[in-house]
Image 1: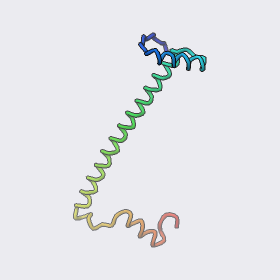
Image 2: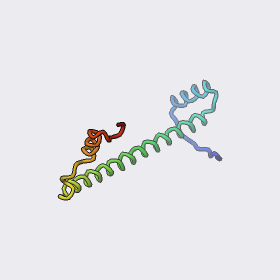
Image 3: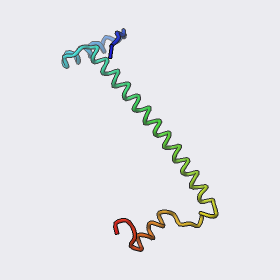
Image 4: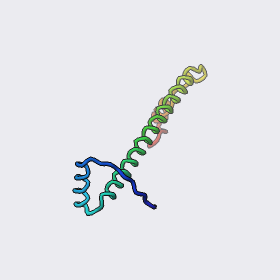
Length: 99
C-alpha cells in the first residue's frame, strides 16, 4: 500500500521517548508512529464493534422479554408447561438426554 507523508507536531518529551524506543528496536520513528496509529484504529474499531454488539444484544433481550410477556398473557398458552418443565419430565421418565 502506498504511503503518504504526514506532518505531526509532537512535544519534546514524546520525541525523546520515540527516539529512545526507535533506537532500542532499531526502527524508524515513523514506523513506530505508524504502528501506534494502526493499533489505535484497531482498538477503536474493536471497541465500537463491541458496543454495537452489546446494543443489539440488549435489543434482542427486550424483544425476547416482550415475546415472553405476550406468550404468557395468551390464555391458550398460559397453562402450558415451560420447556424446562417438559425437559425435567422427560428426564424423570428416563427419556432425557444422557439416559
